[in-house]
Image (cartoon, rainbow, N blue to C red; front, side):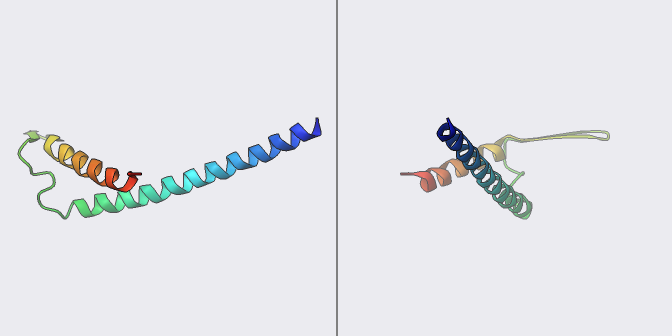
Amino acid sequence: MSRCRRRMVSGDRMDVTQIGRLILVAGIALVVLGGVFMLAGRIPIIGQLPGDIQYERGNTTVYIPIATMILISIVLTLVLNLILRR
């Protein structure tokens, strides 16, 4: 019985370690993503492509960057396929 108990305790510690690694990787990914968003504002073509919809009336502005979202999706798909290819 003590043998099962030891396995369970060491298994719990591995889970905590894995969760710690997951949180660390997620934090690094958020920092990188934040940097990308900060730099994306400096690229003049982002947000001004044909297909990006901007509606202004009075004090209300609605902006829907459809073409920009498609472009970013294609670029990310290509980059991630190259990185994660096994």
